[in-house]
Amino acid sequence: MKREHDRHLRELIRRRGFARRLLRPLPRRANVARYPVIKWFAEHASKRPFLWSFKREHVMPALYGGAILAFLPLFGVQFLAAFGAALLLRCNLTITVGLQFITNPFTLLPIYGFTGYIGNSVMRMLGLGGELGFLLGGANALVVGGIIVGVSVALLADIAWRIAAWEASRFRARMAELEALRQHDERHDNQ
Image (cartoon, rainbow, N blue to C red):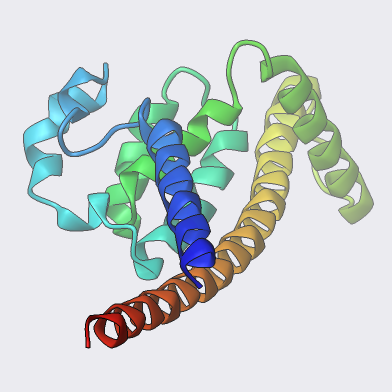
């Protein structure tokens, strides 16, 4: 049992380190003033505990709102939009902003090309937007496609979050069980 307990403890330390490395570049209550647009609202943000909460009720809206915003044609104002969405949806700011990194200068053209294609296909299938012209029709296709792709990515992220939460609860339960056995063995050995 001692060996399994030690292995679980090492795995717990590894998981925490991975989470810290993953969250390091993202805004947190302690470093929110470092972010270009968000720093203007740092005082306002520090008074809203839901922006920093990783409870399920604050994570799920962040996944959906952040994913949809990430695929909308808002490049350049995404962080400001993410901050506004986090306040409006009362969700986790770190996740909402983190999802905005999906669309960056390297992924911009492929993502917007794909969302435009999806939006245009859906609009043609529904018989919408034909009379709008190239420019306005293209903009509408980007928005429609961004919403469709954003919701799809959010659904996948939701499923992944639920699986990870289930696995983490199993891991914590096994860790507690091993800790109780270890304490029992120590008491038994001392007698």
